[in-house]
Image (tube, rainbow, N blue to C red; front, side, top):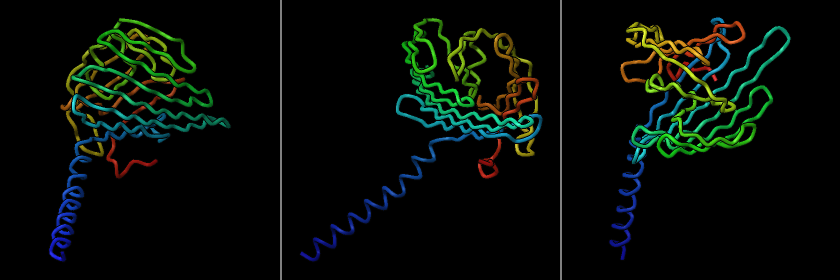
Length: 222
């Protein structure tokens, strides 16, 4: 009896050890892209993009937060987004946004190029134009001419041109990148690394220069 208990205990310990060792392996399969958000060169917030592999594709978790003070006024932005991808195709999006006190919550589900979108603060929409939300974390967005806002799902029409290869500074390191210019309803300068993931985006908002720049997770101030 004592031997059986001992063997059972040892088996349990081994099983626990295997599970414990496997957990970091599963966790290490995900990738996190951290961005510092700057207004005219001053830090105002952060964006975190977590890329989680699944059996059929990827789950993307996006968290963005900014706090801006202009004279005596303070503006707050808090955005959460969950994207599901299968075989390189977007299949669903869920978002929640607090845009300085105005709240939006909507979901979109896709069947190839067709999708249904509905929620709080947005109009219901059924379309087959293959539009994606303005999700800039990967380079494939450069191939899209139909997009919509991640905040209130406002439709956008854009044209994105490849400028060329450049060097972007990431944490004081020279990093090879491909530069694109997006124009139309949305204007962005976009730089992607050799892995096709966003390194930097720059644009104007209400006359201010806004930058999202990749940083190391350990130096991200939240």
